[in-house]
Image 1 (cartoon, protein in one colour):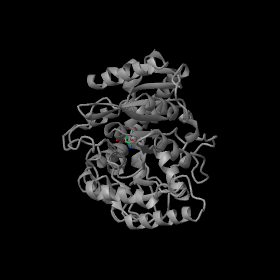
Image 2 (image 1 turned 120 degrees about the vertical axis):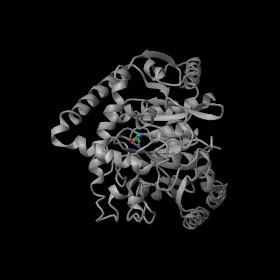
Image 3 (image 1 turned 180 degrees about the vertical axis):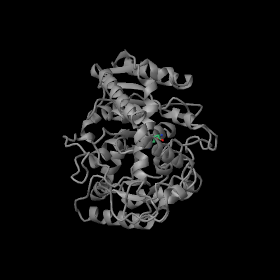
Image 4 (image 1 turned 90 degrees about the vertical axis):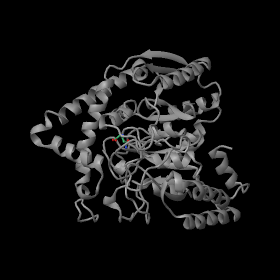
Length: 458
Ligand code: GLN
């Protein structure tokens, strides 16, 4: 039974919301102490919600699209009455005073929020090891990182501790942990989903998006969270498709689909990953898709451009954590990576250096965007690995540049605002490997359709 079918069976009284939740609570009690995917839980309140939904269904009252589904939320999205720490000691005592727009929409559709998930401090990372709450382990390869920065959300879904989860993606933080944990993760077009109530990492890149074990779950969550928000001026006023309806009957839908295969994506990836992705592309070709070989000359510009802009925007976003409003001054409470970014961001932001670094980075960003738009012109999607390497062992010491290199295939979607997804492609000795699909701005539906068609090939 997929996630959509499960939600229907709850609505049809074949299944109870409270039973669904209780099963997850058992798994959370059993596995969370080791995996550390959830950093705060409100199971009693969730059970009260679930019972109330069961009662409404029993009385024939109308319930929302997410009725009875159990959801985890990344710890940088405001949920009223939960601690919203962004995994930083800086915000240790901050409790959400309101619901972010995406949370209001989830609650309005009767989704059950069971807890907050772990992440890298302020979402600045890709391993979930820099959390003030301790690292999360990868449920599929327990001595390894789950990826990040939304590692808790990916791990919670992978370990079957909830139906769906939300993450945020600034340079890969949804797609990277989805790839490492063997689940699906979707980063919408910039502006397709409201960021209102999300703690910024770099606001010109940040997007909220869903995790699920199947495409129906991704589509269902997008149906709920996507669309214009009058509270958030960067949201786009667009015709939000009915994602759940658009993935029905996907047999034969790969026929004639044009897949852009960029040589450079494979050049930077480990051989074991390349082999899996090439096999899966061949399989899509056998199902009728057409492969178009492409080159992306600006690939090596992507990481420096992304990180320069990231440091400047992050530095500016952290100025409010000055110890007056939120208790602790960020520079005194944060970990090494966050402090490094504050120092770098402050240096680059100085007036005399802006021409040297920041302005150049903005020019490079335009160039990258232009080249990606060109690549996407004649194809439906770009296809390739999500992450060029397998997740490393927890605790392994890496230089900042080695850590940033994990993001080389994911940052381009944020630099150019396009949608991107990672979906399971296979494994190397049990360690999951994801395949990434990217499309033109606002072609989020196309990606989700391809994910559904790809899912049926398995
Ligand atoms: N790994 C990248 C960074 O550290 C992106 C993180 C993210 O997407 N939140 O900034």
